[in-house]
Length: 245
Image (cartoon, rainbow, N blue to C red; front, side, top):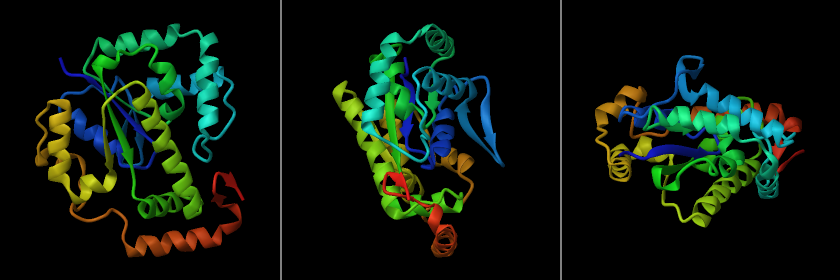
Protein backbone atom coordinates (compact mmCIF):
# COMPACT_ATOMS: atom_id res chain seq x y z
CA UNK A 1 0.00 0.00 0.00
CA UNK A 2 1.38 3.40 -1.00
CA UNK A 3 2.07 5.88 1.77
CA UNK A 4 0.14 9.13 1.85
CA UNK A 5 2.25 12.24 1.15
CA UNK A 6 2.53 15.51 3.05
CA UNK A 7 4.46 18.36 1.46
CA UNK A 8 5.92 20.76 4.02
CA UNK A 9 7.09 24.15 2.81
CA UNK A 10 7.39 27.85 3.56
CA UNK A 11 5.49 28.65 0.37
CA UNK A 12 6.32 29.81 -3.16
CA UNK A 13 8.54 26.80 -3.68
CA UNK A 14 6.83 25.27 -6.69
CA UNK A 15 4.78 23.14 -4.31
CA UNK A 16 1.82 23.24 -6.71
CA UNK A 17 4.04 21.78 -9.42
CA UNK A 18 5.39 19.06 -7.13
CA UNK A 19 1.90 18.23 -5.87
CA UNK A 20 0.50 18.08 -9.39
CA UNK A 21 3.38 15.88 -10.47
CA UNK A 22 2.94 13.43 -7.59
CA UNK A 23 -0.80 13.45 -8.21
CA UNK A 24 -0.13 11.92 -11.62
CA UNK A 25 1.07 8.83 -9.76
CA UNK A 26 -2.45 8.32 -8.40
CA UNK A 27 -2.48 10.52 -5.28
CA UNK A 28 -5.78 12.17 -4.36
CA UNK A 29 -5.87 15.98 -3.93
CA UNK A 30 -9.34 16.09 -2.41
CA UNK A 31 -12.82 16.83 -3.74
CA UNK A 32 -12.07 20.51 -4.35
CA UNK A 33 -8.80 22.42 -4.79
CA UNK A 34 -7.98 26.12 -4.99
CA UNK A 35 -7.51 27.87 -8.32
CA UNK A 36 -5.18 30.83 -8.67
CA UNK A 37 -5.19 32.78 -11.91
CA UNK A 38 -4.56 30.16 -14.59
CA UNK A 39 -3.31 27.25 -12.51
CA UNK A 40 -4.51 24.78 -9.90
CA UNK A 41 -2.70 25.03 -6.58
CA UNK A 42 -3.69 21.41 -5.79
CA UNK A 43 -4.42 22.55 -2.22
CA UNK A 44 -7.31 20.65 -0.67
CA UNK A 45 -9.89 23.36 0.12
CA UNK A 46 -11.12 21.56 3.22
CA UNK A 47 -7.58 21.09 4.55
CA UNK A 48 -6.85 24.80 4.17
CA UNK A 49 -10.11 25.79 5.88
CA UNK A 50 -9.47 23.37 8.73
CA UNK A 51 -5.94 24.73 9.16
CA UNK A 52 -7.38 28.24 9.40
CA UNK A 53 -9.95 27.03 11.92
CA UNK A 54 -7.33 25.21 13.95
CA UNK A 55 -5.11 28.29 14.17
CA UNK A 56 -8.07 30.41 15.24
CA UNK A 57 -9.12 27.88 17.90
CA UNK A 58 -5.54 27.83 19.20
CA UNK A 59 -5.58 31.61 19.53
CA UNK A 60 -3.03 32.33 16.81
CA UNK A 61 -3.30 36.00 15.86
CA UNK A 62 -0.11 36.35 13.83
CA UNK A 63 0.50 36.69 10.09
CA UNK A 64 1.99 33.40 9.00
CA UNK A 65 3.16 34.83 5.67
CA UNK A 66 5.18 37.60 7.31
CA UNK A 67 6.52 36.18 10.57
CA UNK A 68 7.83 32.93 11.95
CA UNK A 69 8.89 31.85 15.43
CA UNK A 70 9.72 28.37 16.67
CA UNK A 71 8.47 29.47 20.08
CA UNK A 72 5.04 30.20 18.62
CA UNK A 73 4.96 26.81 16.89
CA UNK A 74 5.80 25.08 20.16
CA UNK A 75 3.21 27.14 22.04
CA UNK A 76 0.48 26.19 19.56
CA UNK A 77 1.38 22.51 19.92
CA UNK A 78 1.10 22.75 23.70
CA UNK A 79 -2.28 24.50 23.49
CA UNK A 80 -3.61 21.64 21.37
CA UNK A 81 -4.04 19.52 24.50
CA UNK A 82 -7.37 21.32 25.02
CA UNK A 83 -8.45 21.25 21.36
CA UNK A 84 -11.45 19.20 20.25
CA UNK A 85 -9.92 17.09 17.47
CA UNK A 86 -13.21 15.53 16.34
CA UNK A 87 -13.70 17.55 13.09
CA UNK A 88 -10.05 17.05 12.20
CA UNK A 89 -10.22 13.31 12.76
CA UNK A 90 -13.34 13.13 10.61
CA UNK A 91 -11.42 14.86 7.80
CA UNK A 92 -8.50 12.42 8.12
CA UNK A 93 -10.95 9.51 7.98
CA UNK A 94 -12.52 10.89 4.79
CA UNK A 95 -9.10 11.30 3.22
CA UNK A 96 -8.17 7.75 4.16
CA UNK A 97 -11.26 6.51 2.34
CA UNK A 98 -9.63 7.82 -0.86
CA UNK A 99 -6.00 6.98 -0.26
CA UNK A 100 -3.29 7.47 -1.19
CA UNK A 101 -3.77 11.19 -0.67
CA UNK A 102 -1.45 14.20 -0.78
CA UNK A 103 -1.65 17.31 1.41
CA UNK A 104 -0.08 20.68 0.69
CA UNK A 105 -0.64 23.93 2.59
CA UNK A 106 2.09 26.22 4.01
CA UNK A 107 0.03 26.53 7.22
CA UNK A 108 1.06 22.95 8.00
CA UNK A 109 4.28 24.46 9.36
CA UNK A 110 2.17 25.66 12.30
CA UNK A 111 -0.31 22.78 12.49
CA UNK A 112 1.51 19.57 11.53
CA UNK A 113 2.31 18.76 15.16
CA UNK A 114 -1.41 18.69 15.90
CA UNK A 115 -2.31 16.71 12.79
CA UNK A 116 0.32 14.14 13.75
CA UNK A 117 -1.90 13.09 16.65
CA UNK A 118 -4.35 11.78 14.05
CA UNK A 119 -1.95 10.40 11.44
CA UNK A 120 0.08 7.22 11.26
CA UNK A 121 3.78 7.88 10.74
CA UNK A 122 4.09 4.42 9.22
CA UNK A 123 1.61 5.39 6.50
CA UNK A 124 2.92 8.88 5.70
CA UNK A 125 5.81 10.08 3.54
CA UNK A 126 7.15 13.61 3.95
CA UNK A 127 8.70 15.98 1.41
CA UNK A 128 10.25 19.30 2.40
CA UNK A 129 10.34 21.95 -0.33
CA UNK A 130 12.54 25.03 -0.27
CA UNK A 131 13.79 27.59 -2.76
CA UNK A 132 17.14 29.16 -3.60
CA UNK A 133 17.39 32.39 -1.61
CA UNK A 134 17.68 34.78 -4.53
CA UNK A 135 14.91 33.08 -6.50
CA UNK A 136 12.69 33.20 -3.40
CA UNK A 137 13.44 36.90 -2.88
CA UNK A 138 12.63 37.74 -6.50
CA UNK A 139 9.37 35.78 -6.44
CA UNK A 140 8.21 37.34 -3.17
CA UNK A 141 8.79 40.92 -4.28
CA UNK A 142 7.23 40.32 -7.69
CA UNK A 143 4.13 39.19 -5.79
CA UNK A 144 4.26 42.46 -3.81
CA UNK A 145 5.36 40.77 -0.59
CA UNK A 146 8.03 43.38 0.00
CA UNK A 147 10.92 41.85 1.91
CA UNK A 148 14.64 42.23 2.35
CA UNK A 149 16.99 39.42 1.48
CA UNK A 150 17.65 39.04 5.21
CA UNK A 151 13.95 38.46 5.85
CA UNK A 152 13.74 35.95 3.00
CA UNK A 153 16.61 33.95 4.44
CA UNK A 154 15.50 34.19 8.08
CA UNK A 155 11.89 33.28 7.35
CA UNK A 156 12.49 30.48 4.85
CA UNK A 157 15.43 28.90 6.64
CA UNK A 158 13.66 29.20 9.99
CA UNK A 159 10.64 27.29 8.72
CA UNK A 160 12.76 24.65 7.00
CA UNK A 161 14.79 24.09 10.16
CA UNK A 162 11.60 23.80 12.22
CA UNK A 163 10.14 21.20 9.86
CA UNK A 164 13.35 19.17 9.87
CA UNK A 165 13.40 19.33 13.66
CA UNK A 166 9.84 18.00 13.80
CA UNK A 167 10.57 15.08 11.47
CA UNK A 168 13.88 14.24 13.13
CA UNK A 169 12.26 14.19 16.58
CA UNK A 170 9.80 11.59 15.27
CA UNK A 171 12.53 9.65 13.41
CA UNK A 172 10.86 10.23 10.07
CA UNK A 173 12.71 10.01 6.78
CA UNK A 174 12.00 12.74 4.25
CA UNK A 175 13.09 14.03 0.87
CA UNK A 176 14.22 17.63 0.56
CA UNK A 177 14.12 19.50 -2.73
CA UNK A 178 14.42 23.04 -3.95
CA UNK A 179 12.17 24.11 -6.80
CA UNK A 180 15.37 24.58 -8.75
CA UNK A 181 16.14 20.85 -8.38
CA UNK A 182 13.07 20.07 -10.46
CA UNK A 183 13.79 22.76 -13.03
CA UNK A 184 17.53 22.19 -13.46
CA UNK A 185 17.76 18.45 -12.72
CA UNK A 186 14.32 17.05 -13.53
CA UNK A 187 15.51 13.51 -14.32
CA UNK A 188 17.32 13.26 -10.97
CA UNK A 189 14.29 14.66 -9.13
CA UNK A 190 11.87 12.24 -10.80
CA UNK A 191 14.16 9.31 -10.04
CA UNK A 192 14.40 10.34 -6.37
CA UNK A 193 10.61 10.70 -6.10
CA UNK A 194 10.02 7.33 -7.74
CA UNK A 195 12.42 5.59 -5.36
CA UNK A 196 11.03 7.31 -2.26
CA UNK A 197 7.34 6.89 -3.11
CA UNK A 198 7.64 3.63 -5.07
CA UNK A 199 5.92 5.12 -8.09
CA UNK A 200 6.67 5.40 -11.82
CA UNK A 201 6.69 9.06 -12.80
CA UNK A 202 8.33 10.03 -16.10
CA UNK A 203 9.58 13.17 -17.79
CA UNK A 204 6.31 13.23 -19.71
CA UNK A 205 4.57 13.74 -16.36
CA UNK A 206 6.90 16.65 -15.56
CA UNK A 207 6.19 18.30 -18.92
CA UNK A 208 2.44 17.80 -18.48
CA UNK A 209 2.51 19.71 -15.19
CA UNK A 210 5.26 22.28 -15.78
CA UNK A 211 4.70 23.90 -19.17
CA UNK A 212 7.62 26.29 -19.10
CA UNK A 213 11.20 25.67 -20.25
CA UNK A 214 13.21 23.22 -18.15
CA UNK A 215 16.96 23.33 -17.45
CA UNK A 216 16.76 26.99 -16.47
CA UNK A 217 15.65 28.88 -13.37
CA UNK A 218 12.16 30.32 -13.39
CA UNK A 219 13.33 33.87 -12.63
CA UNK A 220 15.99 35.52 -14.77
CA UNK A 221 17.93 38.78 -14.76
CA UNK A 222 14.98 40.88 -15.98
CA UNK A 223 12.85 39.47 -13.17
CA UNK A 224 15.58 40.39 -10.69
CA UNK A 225 15.69 43.98 -11.94
CA UNK A 226 11.90 44.28 -11.75
CA UNK A 227 11.87 42.83 -8.23
CA UNK A 228 14.59 45.25 -7.17
CA UNK A 229 12.62 48.21 -8.55
CA UNK A 230 9.49 47.09 -6.66
CA UNK A 231 11.51 46.59 -3.48
CA UNK A 232 13.13 50.04 -3.66
CA UNK A 233 9.83 51.76 -4.45
CA UNK A 234 8.23 50.13 -1.40
CA UNK A 235 11.34 50.11 0.78
CA UNK A 236 9.66 51.66 3.84
CA UNK A 237 7.07 48.85 3.89
CA UNK A 238 9.56 46.01 3.67
CA UNK A 239 9.76 43.02 5.98
CA UNK A 240 13.31 43.13 7.34
CA UNK A 241 14.70 40.26 9.40
CA UNK A 242 11.85 38.68 11.36
CA UNK A 243 9.93 41.91 11.92
CA UNK A 244 8.46 44.57 9.69
CA UNK A 245 10.73 47.63 9.57
